[in-house]
Structure formats: structure tokens, C-alpha cells
Image 1 (cartoon, rainbow, N blue to C red):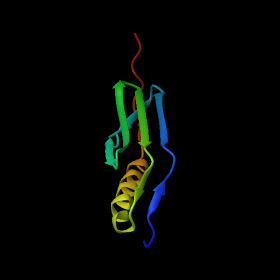
Image 2 (image 1 turned 90 degrees about the vertical axis):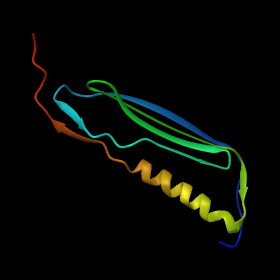
Image 3 (image 1 turned 60 degrees about the vertical axis):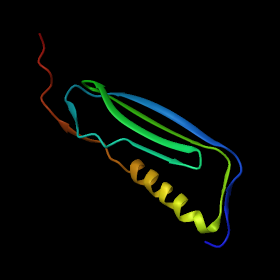
Image 4 (image 1 turned 30 degrees about the vertical axis):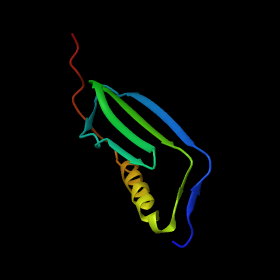
Amino acid sequence: RKLPYFLGQPQVQSSTVKMKLAPELLALGLPAGHVAELHGGRYELQIEAPEPGTLRIHRAIALPPFAIPADQYAEFEAFCAKVDEAERGQLRFVRGAPPSGP
């Protein structure tokens, strides 16, 4: 890269999704969460099962305006690659036996 990179406006996004699974579905090994920080900015991904049959996915990114000199761009590129990798995590499900009723 020969020119600096400049982010002129703050970028702030946050979303949380709570999924109620069908009784016969079981989540197989949730992807690991991820936190990355760069130039005062932060990316966070959390995937958890707060209770049986429920998934909660939270993602947030907050980047303040910043300038990155061309010779430091590789650090920003690595940050973006880690975020991309975290976002590609897949949820996998298997059909299990439905819970037995009373």
C-alpha cells in the first residue's frame, strides 16, 4: 500500500439475536467468541446458549475516525481478516430426540 487509509466517520453497529430452537434441534459446538481491538476501535462477537434450546448471538463494532499510515496498513488488514474469520463461523445443528412430555 502506498497511500494512508483514513476513516473519517465513526462506525458503530451492534446487534443481538436470540434464537429459540425447535425442540428437536440441538446446537453442535458453538463457534468461539472473538474480541479484536485496533486504534481505539473494538469488534466483539459472542455466541452462547443461555439456556437449553436458546441461542444468543451478539456482535458489535465501534470504530472511531482514524488515519493509518501506509506502512502500518498491515495491522489494519490483519484486524479485518480476524473479524472476517469470526464472522464466517458456522452454527451447526443436529436433530435430537424431542424432550419427553409429562
